Image (cartoon, rainbow, N blue to C red):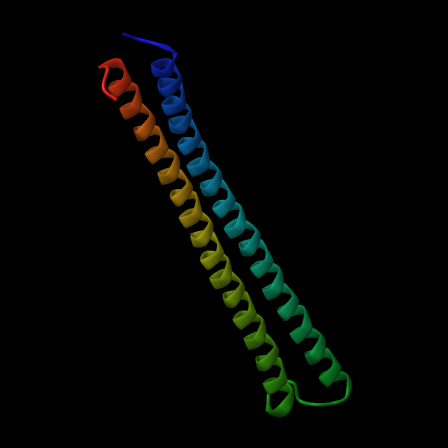
Length: 131
């Protein structure tokens, strides 16, 4: 009753299960990497904003301006606000990208899972002699 087709279908089903797990793990890892890199970049953006605001404050002080009021203070606030905005947008974009990566991984996992189920059904039908 059992022939090479049954064994081939079983191996194909097992391969699908392994590939599904691997696709899921890879997408999780890639999504985590995207988020980690963005978190680091966002921190750098904020640090650079602080440096730029400090430089603007120093330049205003060198020119004899009161750095705590008026235009000098507005410039510093604008620089810090822009840095915070850019940092937040960077994190938001990375979350979107990570979610897209996970969705693609889940779709790939489901595809492998369906192929695996089909192979096991095929193996069972061949073993029972169904055509």
